[in-house]
Each structure stands twice: as C-alpha cells, then as structure tokens.
Image (cartoon, rainbow, N blue to C red; front, side, top):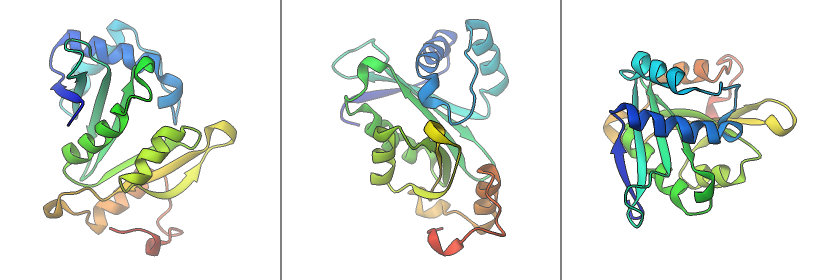
Length: 184
C-alpha cells in the first residue's frame, strides 16, 4: 500500500476506534438496517465474533497515530464478506481504493458483498477491481447491487458449491440465476 499502513485489531481501544468510524458511516454502510453501537455493545460483539472475522485499522503514513478507516472481513463457509468505512473527513482521499485492493488480497479467495447504487465512489472502485453484479434488490435510494468477486488467489478458486453458498448468502435463487453472466 502506498498511502496507508494496516494494523490488525486486537485490543479494546482499537475495537472502540472501529465502532466510532462505523457509527459515523451507518447510512453509507447500510445495505440492510444496522444498529448504532454503544461502547459496551461493540466490545460484547467483538468478544462473540472476533474468531469469525479479520479486522484492521488503517493509518496514513503521513499522519502517524491517526486511524482513518477500518476493514472487517467476515469469514464464511468458503468465502468472505467485507465491510469498510472511512472517516468522512477522509472521503475523496484515495484511501477507499487502497483498502478495497487490500481486502481482496486479504480475503485470499472468493468474496460476496453488496453496494448501495447511490454510493458512486464505491460503485466506481468496485467496478475497477473486478466485482461482478449478480443482481439487485431494494427500492428508491436503497437500491442495492448484489456482488461477487472471484478473488485473486489462483489456488483458492471459487468452487461450484461455494458459489451456491454465495448465492444463498445474497438471497439469489439459483434456479433462476443465469450462470453464463458470471466468471467463477
């Protein structure tokens, strides 16, 4: 990475920084309803979930000690799902694209996700890095693209079984899905 240093989240103070960035970005993270988290809620959530996730904070090289973003990769059955958020004051800094590239590498295999269609920045970045739109859902300002990325690890390619689990995760009926429009 050129602009950011990535630091694994392991300590309660880091979980708190993640919570603050998360709460600041709820409307842009929320392809489904997400709760506002208190300090206690977040620490409890971390205790329950830290073994099923990889989480990281990002610090600009030119701003040591200032953590501006987080990545949460949830480890699922054969694939990962990412959540990223940046402090609003850092939007437009180019950090988002760097974090997306980083999580594709860290996922080490297939990835599923969603994006709000009205979040032009993330839609642009996701298209550039190879996310494929499998479908859409929602209404009005909450139109959501359902996404798949095959990953970059040639040794950890998406199997047919994993792809079916991704469709299930995204709530896409495999009996009506056009498999010819996706690269597995």
